[in-house]
Image (cartoon, rainbow, N blue to C red):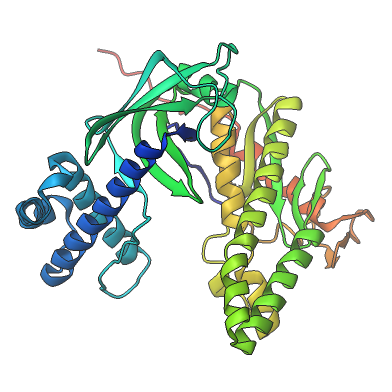
Length: 403
């Protein structure tokens, strides 16, 4: 029987809250962003020279040097810069990249903790109109007052108005505020807040929803639902063709167009994966399933035996991202996620258990004579593996030994 396990991780969520700074406050935020980037680059240079990625040892080697060179940045932001550099270096090492100096852009995000920022729940008055002509934000109750952000800047503490919507309010009421990231994009400022949420109550339903992932069919469930991936594949192929054409051109206008479309494909794929994962979790809730079973596709890229064109398509397949989205959405709904070995799930008949023949999307079994969609058949096999793994086993017979 295939090996199966469950991934368990803490319940953490990140929400983005829009900041509404005045012109002077926006300048203070830009100055803070630039100073934090300079501190991170200084720490990165020391870490590169010392070949050190441990946060504690890097703190002892870089803290006083950064504080003496940049005294206005403050002690806690210097500690945050050291932590950010150490985390970046560890990520480089985990990905197998060579030892290098990590460079931070001037508009990089600023890592904040409990000592450098605080969300104040007291009402904060917001003017009816600001210098840019934008209307005043409304709070959830429509009073025209919102929450306030108290943040450390180069010019001291600043209190900045926030635009908190009903979605963010629901998470803030349920969770505990932890660290945050200050981000500036196209003249707008956002605060990405990390929250610790209470664990959702596990659902007692014994049903298992099997999910088979693919490229032509992005996901197929054991209940028979197919989430098509043909349109997504066509969009990815169009982006690939455009990048190839522009990179081969090499002109200045081609480079400018490449910069404008940079990241557009990944954002589109992420959006589609969010939609599919939400529908999968909603289907599990509707059918009363307490477990979602998916395939363990680890190292699948190393096992691909195909031509260059097929390898290019399959290596850009964001299957792991879709699984991660299903994981955290299911965790918030109290549904367990299990991973099974996908060996022969596409070649085994879900009706009788014999080997059948698969040709593209058509599966046929000579033993029982059924015809089925190949991805639905694979999803049913994955669901059966999940049911067998969750089935209770018999108790061990222990001899009674008299005292």
